[in-house]
Length: 326
Image (cartoon, rainbow, N blue to C red; front, side, top):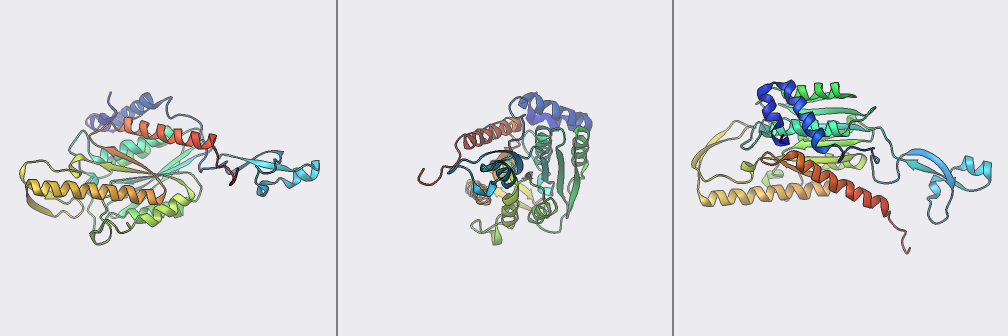
């Protein structure tokens, strides 16, 4: 059963069937690859106090000295830090009108729901909580963080039931939603932003800073952040079909354009430049960047990204930063 077709197939058979197919697809394809204990919410040794041990000069940080044990034993001791094992995950799901579009195996909206479900099912353990902020129309809705599979099903059901084509009076409120999520949820954890990031910068200049960059950097300063960019192939290149009527889903404006080879080439170059600008901007923010396409197997892409991420984390744990001159 292909992961890329799970939400679209399920929509015809009913929302409940779609959710169950999504869970089965993700677990069967990914179980044993991604499942495991949390290795910590931020890089480094951890944030929770652990056991005390004898201080090793030149290797241990004196700021972690355990003075009470040192006083009792008259031998310098430090207290180790362990990773926080209770994970709180919040996802920002962009369901703006630009997501009601798709020309391949699924719509971008379906891919957003699939991504939220995959992240929720693959990060949740006993005691872990999962919540979401949803951009829909001119509003940012908050779905409270809860534990358990029933709560996850309820959250995905809410996303599936969200009305399509909600009117907006301006650009997608991505920056505001990121800022809201960062200010409201202070506990360190995993934060995921799922959007198409269709932003041309100020006055259409790709070299300028996007409105969402500063909120994203603030979010990444405290949490582990993953940005999931949802892309449809028709957003990267146009077909050779002659005269077409193009409609902006955000504003509703329609314009007829004759797709000459010159226009198609200019469009492809502009689209590639915009996606490259997104990549550079997200890298500047210091967040993980995963691109999912409606014409690819999204499960496979999530697996590949996560394996690379875990391999990097494993190597970083085995080879800690050495002291200068060591």
